[in-house]
Image (cartoon, rainbow, N blue to C red; front, side, top):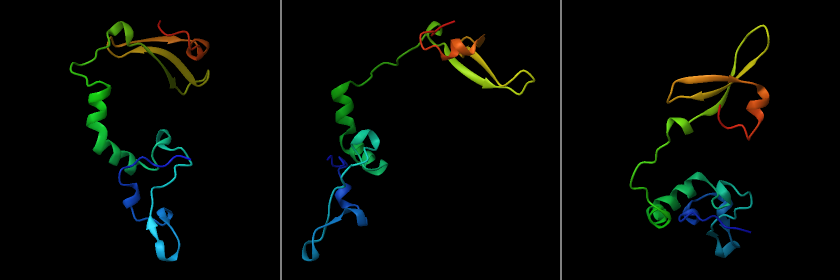
Amino acid sequence: MKYCQGTKCHEYKTKDRIRGHKGDKHYETRRNSRGFYNGEFCSNMCRDDWFNTFGKRAVDHFGRIHEPKRTDASASWHKTCAWQHSSDGGSRYYFVNDLLGERRPITQAQYNDENFVSP
């Protein structure tokens, strides 16, 4: 069973962290049986504690970005569904490119097809 990786998890004074018998009571890191937060942390607070302590080193180790990343207009198409109140039914499906300001209608089958990725 995994334990929460939060650096201060054992310092938070909650009843579910109390362990031990009568004369040896203490606060202890939570067991992470539910697998929240990617299975590493028991709460957002513990996740934030870890990132505040180790985040800079982790980003430096795994790769800090020194220049902005870009996506051209040709690669920025995405599918969207817009519900419209009309006599012939509900949803309309589109390919949208916000960079070009274009919206092209598609069918529901094309919308549901994961291999159909550009108009």
